[in-house]
Image (cartoon, rainbow, N blue to C red; front, side, top):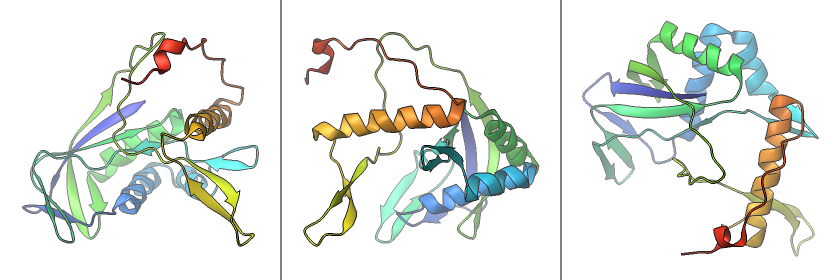
Length: 197
């Protein structure tokens, strides 16, 4: 399920650093704790487990505003600000909605964003093929041993062959962690669909 949360700054404008994802994640846990502190603690400290890995099973966009300006040390936003959050887990969705309604504002970097509206977005109609546009970058990494003999992460470019494979494996693991069963096999992909334009 996907939410669109419409907000506006409590003051005339919102000032934020370029890297503010941690503050958005903290706000989500704050909303969850308002409704269900036990679930919020579980999600933050443990998460959903599968094959030695844990997953939070939610995602969120950056703050989106038509009235935004880049400055040297961050961003300035004014007027309406939209924020998208999604999760396949019913308890997350229920707790988030209750928490947002109970709190009525988004605590954000010693500032407040007032909640104007919470909209539940309709489920897309999926067919045999679809195009997607992400609201934030997809980060894919793998582990490798460097020349110093130490294990470290290697972040992959979408141009690298491993990128799609690791992304698909990650999505399958998340499906299993969420639903407790293997992901259904996708339909065969025809060669012409993979051609670049």
